[in-house]
Amino acid sequence: MTKEYEINTTTRTVNRFMSFLVKLGLAPKGIHLLTVPGRKTGNLYTTPVTLVIKDGRRWLVAPYGEVGWTINARAAGQVKLERGRKTEMSKIKEVAPEKRAPILKAYLALEPITRPYFIARPDSPLEKFAAEAERHPVFELITPDKTGENDA
Image (cartoon, rainbow, N blue to C red; front, side, top):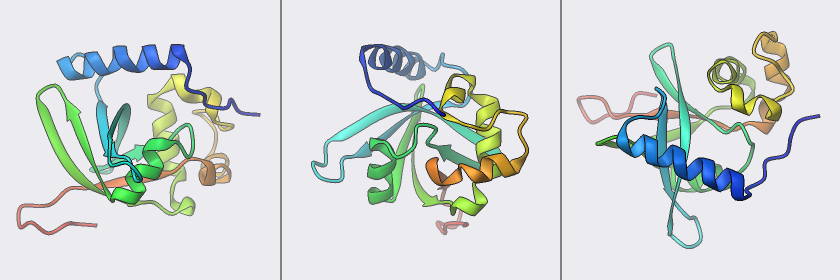
């Protein structure tokens, strides 16, 4: 059984502290602030996320499942990422569940704090990650190349 994600005082405090560190550029490598507009209100929502960089591509993983940012990002089709003074807008493309396993495995190796939300362990075979891929949305960041085209 996996842990259920819940936003409580501790979660809010940790997210605020991590956001502060990210804005200063002092957070651990790979952590960024993700900002998306609310799909109903248009209000901007920001949360710290860890990017997975694998095979020269960048991925966003939702370790807690279908949470606010995943639903809003899916609706917007793009996200804003910030780290220190650097800001970028990036289109996103959701990865099909049958292709998520290697990215989920790489993510879990990067983020030990999210292990209670996974059945698979970092040393589990890809089949274990594939078995729970439906519960963890994954998005590829599609950054425009030099010609302005997106490479997918």
